Image (cartoon, rainbow, N blue to C red; front, top):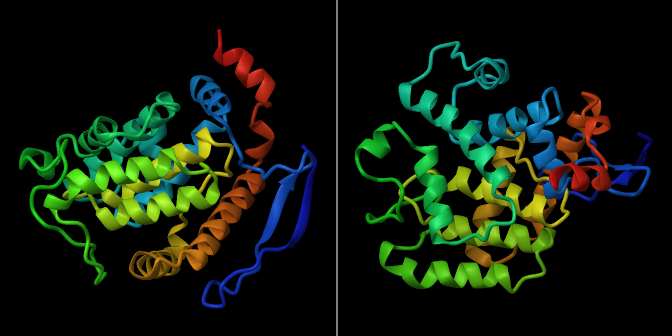
Length: 280
């Protein structure tokens, strides 16, 4: 696959000083712009790029929520079903469950985002955990909650019957492009509909929306945790999401470059082949 490097992407001055470039395929598409057929075909195939994409996404998303699994330990769990290292039992279950959620999201690409879908993702993520045993999963929150490390006032349980239909309508009426995906993420995290797991569920939804709408996959890199959370809070409190979109663009480019460096971009099947195989 021929690759060309374009000019540096503009970033907010508060972001990393490391230079990142927009990397594109020879056909002009971002390296990791993958559609539903391509992702589902790779999932079904042994030794495919899927086996690298999934742990890369999960490592960063789980790390943002305090998981203690290293990249190597997570790969061991994904590839061999073995747990190495010292981890709290809930972290083990949630990490294992996140693999199941990732697979389910890929299997159900094209399904609408609604109450039933969201609650199932939440239930899957927390199976066998203390939250599940306490009855806090598989439904929207019943006790007011907060975002750790943030002063943002999230929706109250009594707000959800109005807030969730408005969120779904906002998405359904949007352009389903990069900007709409980030705006949906801002609103979802501001509502914080579940007692726990909102960050991970929100990032799974971003991945789903990217794959369904020909948008370069957004993998929120844990190295950008500070600007991600800071600009997310600003977007929630002021309505200004421009700088958060720059962070998300940086995350896309980081993921593209990592996958290109590992040779993964050469393993993405072309759209026509993927569509044909996915219809078999």
